[in-house]
Image (cartoon, rainbow, N blue to C red; front, side):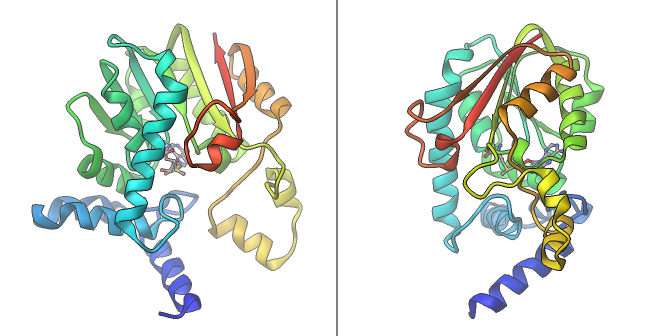
Length: 263
Ligand SMILES: C[S@@+](CC[C@H](N)C(=O)[O-])C[C@H]1O[C@@H](n2cnc3c(N)ncnc32)[C@H](O)[C@@H]1O
């Protein structure tokens, strides 16, 4: 298939399956699909759905992309998260996507609450990465719970949030994280072609406005902007560090930054 036709079909499929405002695979009917197909083709169906979203798979070979996602998330957990986890930990994975990271964390802890805005991706995650100690849920469902969690981590998510959405996420996280608990947020700095939200909003070209409105938002944030948002949400003891040299994961994350904080 011609690359242009493939990309047009992908945009069309993305629009049909989305619930708008960055909620890819968020249309209600999408979450029913993995349950309705016969068990023998459930995993293939989940991978096909994931390939429609701009978030998860970058190459055409879905099995290879799934393997890449599983491996990179296992390495990130081993290299970065392991020191913050033990058998008694209750962890909250914010923006869990297809659950590859939640599955790796679940093998080390008591419980994982895996939260994502998209009901469609949560349905795929249940098929691909279900485990007895993982609850897949939306932010609304996580917000209705009152039980405290020990650690909140979020990888490859903050970059896709507007300041408004990031503020709402931090309010939820602040309410659920126990006193003394740890917040871990990976983020991308506004370098190497990453533009800030303000720069995107200032772009008045037709393609820039269309990308901001209908495409996947990707915003870089400075360390100062990250710290200010997190402190405004009520966190303290903020530490920001480059991830270079800390993980051998074959992923952009390994060249970006993280923020650690507590209350
Ligand atoms: C690039 S994926 C990262 C998935 C996973 N954290 C990983 O690293 O494999 C970003 C995820 O964030 C989710 N997301 C975007 N906006 C969100 C929001 N406001 N609340 C919760 N999840 C959100 C998307 O649906 C998507 O699954």
